[in-house]
Image (cartoon, rainbow over all chains, first blue to last red; front, side, top):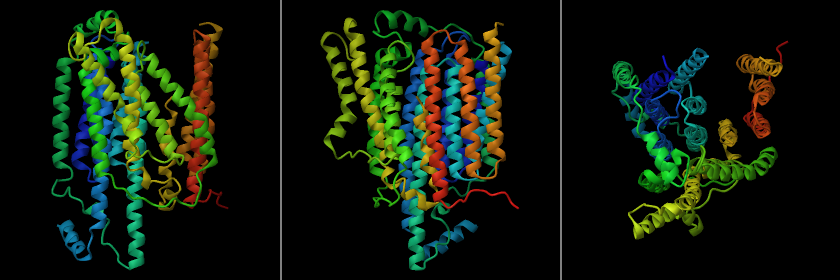
Length: 109
Length: 350
Length: 101
């Protein structure tokens, strides 16, 4: 087992865990965390594959792309957090008493 | 000796996956977010082991520090919103049946069956792909390109910086546009809950720490930017450090910058404007984004310096858009006070 | 192995021991204040020993200076964080743990 293979497998597992989390988790923030985990998994696989030889630094092109990816991921996270924060605020605001019974019925289904 | 290193790699990889599972299944969101920050820091070590030091710097500052701060901030402001609602309900005598969040969608998905199948499928496909691709130890052509061109024509000797700002500069140019679009979207969505400042003052210990650390962080950012032309470092890492400085100042009670100010808007776009100007200027003697070889080093440093300022401004704006709600003093009444101090790991990054 | 290597090795092992002690403390201590105590004290000493062990292996004085700068900065940051967490816990109404009589 080379370390490249170890990190490739870890990246694939992280992607799977993250994708699974995006399906399983219900809270929007946790979904966004899962998205970040899946993204990190992709970065890890990508960079592990970029390292063709164990003793040399990885290919600079994938490194630059992953660096770009990390910065884009944080901005996407900020947008997603702002959006879900607004959704949560709206859900809190528009909670008329008569609707809340209906909502509860939905949940018990 | 190699055996020990591989043991370390395997332990680190297992820890990463274990923490990722912990992030998803931790009891409360605060725990998830703290675990996510730990995940980012460990991932930075993994980048070091893969000899991608540029990425390790960016991951520690952005992936762990800023993303964690964004999450903690978002958590604190939603807690605060629902707390406000609870006090309102107590005053009006209305009791909500359930927290609004639990009424959000995501019903109808079987809780375990479908995702588990999906996990296994994705894991298998990924393992299969890796078993095909990883053993190919073919020498890649890109390092030679970077070595030949990077040193002779690129104007900088750090191959990653050469790729970012010379050979694939159009990627970076468009990335800055993406960041600006993200700022617009965040400002459009952000819940602006202006509230009066709490009576409890910010801690004097924090204030003196910030006074001591901020000049040092700015110095380190400048160093990282300058060293980026020949060693790991560069515009993104320096911008991340500057942004962490800005976040630290906000946590210590500073006001988030307002995008209504013309000078802040100039900060946000100066990097893109300089980049575009240089790119168009290159068309005079050659093609779009082509630097005159003798000037390449200086032009790249100019673009990097302005990009650092702009990206830091963008990241600070992304954080500040929702910060007004999370006043350090005001958070304490929400019972979720730990949100404020734990944003500090972003200050540890230098 | 030279005598310097032995010193370096011993210092790193001692450092790891203090990290282990700090972690055990964080897991076993009863409340937030005692856990902070375990983390900030044991880990800062452990880090100092690790830094000392690495500094013995450094080639130039610049590297030594950087290593000790890192140690100083982390001590500063962890002290501040410890204070903030403890302050926040007090404000949230958590009273320090007392041994049950």
